[in-house]
Structures are given as C-alpha cells and as structure tokens.
Image (cartoon, rainbow, N blue to C red):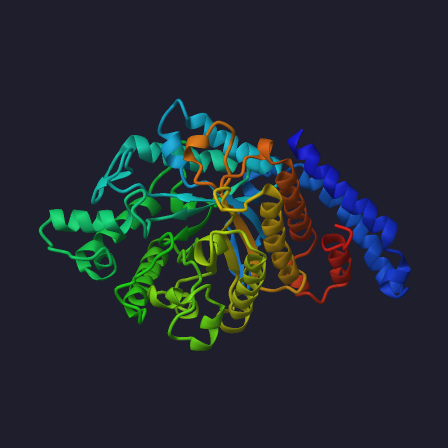
Length: 462
C-alpha cells in the first residue's frame, strides 16, 4: 500500500510528461525527440524500480560519497528528502517502546524519505549510553545497534550525531561535570571545546562508537553504508569566544579524529549556519545580531580539513519572532539561497538543511502555514537541484509515529494527522528519487536529458 502511493505519483508525472512534452516543447529537433523517447523509457523503468527500493540487494547498498557539490551513490546523484527523530535509541532501549522505532522507519519509507538524523549519544542521563567517560551501558548500545539495523531494512540512511551543545541528553555540560568530578575546576560549559581532558573524553567516545560492531548485523559502524554521515555535535556554539577561534580549533581536531578512524564515511559539523567574523559581508543574512556572537562561522568552520558537507538549520520562529509572519517566508528563502551560493562558490560542497520546521505552539500557527513553509524549503532545494547546485536536501524537524505525543516539542509531524503535509513530503521524495534514478554524475548537466528532467521534476502545474 505504502509504495503503491509513491508509484501512483510517479505514474502521474509520467503521464504528464507524455501528454505535455511534444517535440515542440524541445524545439522540434530529431535529437531532442530521441531524448524524449529515451527519457520515456527510462521513466517507465524508474517507476518500476522505485517501487522496489526496499528490495535493494546488499551489493547495491553502497556508501554515500561526495563528488564536488553533489552526494553520490554508485555514481548516481543522491539528493536527500529526510527527517529528524532524535529519540530512537532511547525508545529502542525499552521493549515496550521499541516498536515505535520500526513505525518511524516504516512510515517515513512510505512517503519516500531516505535519510534520518538521530542521536548516537546520551551522556550521563536517564538510559545513558555513556554513563561516565568511556563507560557504556551495553543494553543501550544494543538499542543503537537495533536502530541502525532497522533503518537498513527500510533503506533509510542515518546521520548520527555524536554529542550535544545543549543540556538535553547530557552534551557538553555533562562532559564539564565529569571533568569537575575528576578535579579539573572548570568554570564554563565552553571548556568542553578547549580543555585537553574533555577533548580526550570526546575523542574516546568517537573511537568507541565508530569501532562498534553491531550486534544485529555483525557490521562495524565505520564499515556500514547505512550510516550516511557522522555529525560532530548538534548545534555547536561557543559564546565565550565570539572570534570563533576556539570552536574552529575544536572542529579541526575532531574532524581529523573521525576521519583518521573512519575515512570512508562523510563528516559534517552540525552547525546552524550563522555567519561570523571571517565573512562580515554575509552577516546581513543572519536572523539577528546575536547570531554573530555565538562563536560559529559558517564558511570558515566548513573549510576545516575533513569536513565533507555543510549543515544549516532553519528556525524563523525561534530566531526572528515566535508570532507567525510572512516575513518568515522571505527570510527562509534568502537564508537558504545565501548558503547554497556560498556552498557552491566558496566551499565546493553540498549543503543539507538538516533541521527545519514550524511549532504548533507559535501564536498564529495553522497547518496550512506549516505546509507553506515546508513547500518553500522544498522548492528552494528543487531550484538548486535543477541547476546542478549545492542544495543537496533537507531534513524535517521532526517526524513522529502515532502514540508519541509526550515527546512532541510542538514541531512533530504525524502523517495520520497531517494528510496535506504527507502529500507534500511524498511529492518531494518522488521528484528527487526520479532525478536520482534518471541521471548520473557523468551527465555533468550537459546531457540530453536535462530539459526532460526539468520538465518532469519542476512542472509548473505541480
């Protein structure tokens, strides 16, 4: 049933193509008519193949790689439509809630989403993975194993974050507590970035996670293509050093550390995307003046050796005003376009908008506005995709199954309660999946299918 829905949308696109694209649409040349004929045949094949995504053979389940400003798998583009569900490991640690992990992946797969971002940490908290430095709860680690193995069953890849800037699930504050318990006399949570002992704690955690052998699949994490990328930290900030030097030094050391242990997987920092001192001409795109003072620096941070792609978050309702406003939409568009441009011109890498959403707790909220925000993000990605740009995908914050209302921070999307949102997600997934299927990196955007692809994926009537 679930795959059938996606195939129907694919078929509709195919019928629109054959109905609307005559030889006149291509200027009537014989060459373009051949492209159309070839494209029709490939489209038919892609419709069949897309419905069989869950049946991908292990031999075809390869690592995601970066080639220029694109992600690729098996030398084909891999544009991302995905989601966040941060609590998967904790739910998997309890038999009574483990089934919700399966539900998340099953429902996400039903609307064609292919990447999930989630936590590979829980430091010193309830159901902690890391109870104290280098001391782990094996049952919780097995829960993370389950998350990874279950994701693969539904052909969903994972971005695994390794710690938190915020106190939820421990994060840098917990590392500082551990340091003080060891007699270090630390005074700021930002000492996490600079104190050599705390750096050694974090590096030990990285080593443990990357070298973990999954108890369900017997595959070492660092060898598992199910893992899309490692994220150094969720939303790192270092407000004690607005120059950004302290955080930059930490990023350089930790990106190198991850790559030294695991050169096969991609690495990203986990940044929100704020512009900093190295690019004063770009700070005009920041949502507020405070954003320039949190110790992050979008372009400089992503130029660190070992960082493979850029991450950006989008929260107009947190950064500009909680009250819903049309100005949020214009901010979202300019924020995204600025980062896509910079990823192309200065970084030469893909950029993923790794968190975005609208809270139902915002004054003036309604589901139609949320759909408008989601559509705006998706359309900006598509506008980049059709030009072969750096806009590589986006991840909704956040995706929930039924019966998890107690975890909702206001941003949860439950498909059964949001049919219009579900349709928008599914259409975006279909467009990106068809593009990923129809083209390959050797096209280099000069291939004879370019016009065809644009007509298929970006038809005005959609």
